[in-house]
Image (cartoon, rainbow, N blue to C red):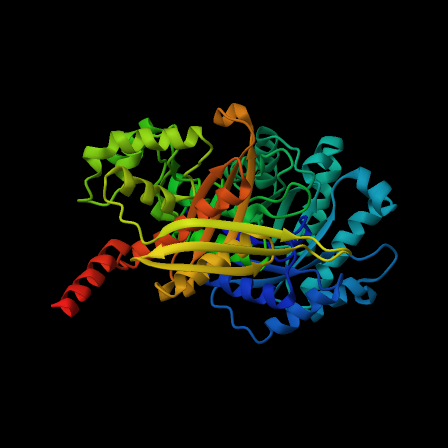
Length: 536
């Protein structure tokens, strides 16, 4: 099947979403990525509504797009104002884009109450605006706002608004489910009627208020629509827009549309948009989320190891994602084996590792996202763990003074490495930071590479007795990086400092292990050998 035209409105409709904001420079950067990905039309914003969007179109004059066409968005002329005198239409022309998308009212309720004009005047506003922009050499897409609700209220009038736009020269008629509450069968039937009636290509612009935006887009395409409008990540007003990230793989991989977009870059594009907008990625996002191909149950993991098709609807690599095996008390031997490197003896010890994992999870540990702690635990179970230091004790103190100043936090630790004792202290912003600094200070003299470590995330969860078999257990999960790699560790205890200490120690030991640093037992052996040579 021929490709569906992909119209991206992340830079305009997406920014109407709660918490989603972009600078003009962010929008330029995202536009470049959308173009490189293969989007057909990029809607940059509404230049007549705010200076930021006007600035974006100024910046885009110096950007050469390789595939996509840029569109400016706005409304029809105001009532009682000639098109050439309408400030909104003039701003659309000033944006200097090859495509202009304008929206008009299709629902009599909006015409009478929102616009407060007659039905005839609304048709004239649509007709005049499209004709004016066409006369200025712009290709015009017409967004029929509230089309499906408008059709339900007055079918003849909703269709008449499309007639007005088509007669004036619109090259696309886009049916908008603006309130996001239409059902797929209704969208299918109405779109089929419009496609049969009009010669110009028809588009669909569904919102996601009933969690049906993707379904409604597919229903419209099944009826003959050939343009879809949506956003990366589904961002948009209220519950959001059609999520192009969810729709595109379905079009190409499941329905056979000849989409030119390279889906192997889909996850990267979704993450890039999240990053520019300072939004956390949706872990459970279809196709591209971390959980999309994550397997936790032992039966699932065992089957996927034999044939991924047993529990995966597409290969994760097809959309730039990857398979993950999670570890928990629901795990089986297959989970443990999937997490073990070839030749490390895991098959023989898998049952013992699994038993230890389930015991620790009963006590409050959680190894999802804490694979470094799991790795160290498996080494201990297999008898391959070799410590890098011995802890002889730590102390954390808080000194609260008068006034509003934060408490003074100080931690001291006593460690031993290869027979050498080190007792140090450090202050910090809070007890965990102080303990982290003290550990780094004490061990840094023996292991200089620890200076590369930086704690990037710290999460605390208080667990109920029902979850752990005990009362008032605290779970601490830590994310650490050395600039090259990032890893997670976990600790659990009835005391938050002790739980934090366990997670911090695992982070340090994992760094030393992955860098193949000499453990303390080997250091002691070397020291003993040197002493023997001196005596001889």
